Image 1 (cartoon, rainbow, N blue to C red):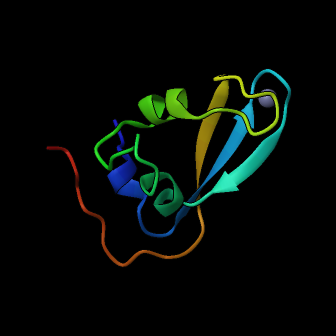
Image 2: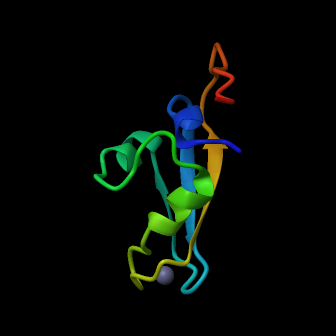
Length: 78
Ligand SMILES: [Zn+2]
């Protein structure tokens, strides 16, 4: 299971509200700036913390999108 940590570099997240259909993008760093996020959270846990920007429901799905090459992979299986 991938953690937020694994997406720090070279990824963005595409957020989509299952309720109203609104979608937007966030960088992992933006999420980590929030007080309720930490880098060892699994993506499904992260998704439950995210509130839709328009309807304010917690019904958001999160999809990582690769935005640039990374030169190493940290095999974060700890
Ligand atoms: Zn919504």
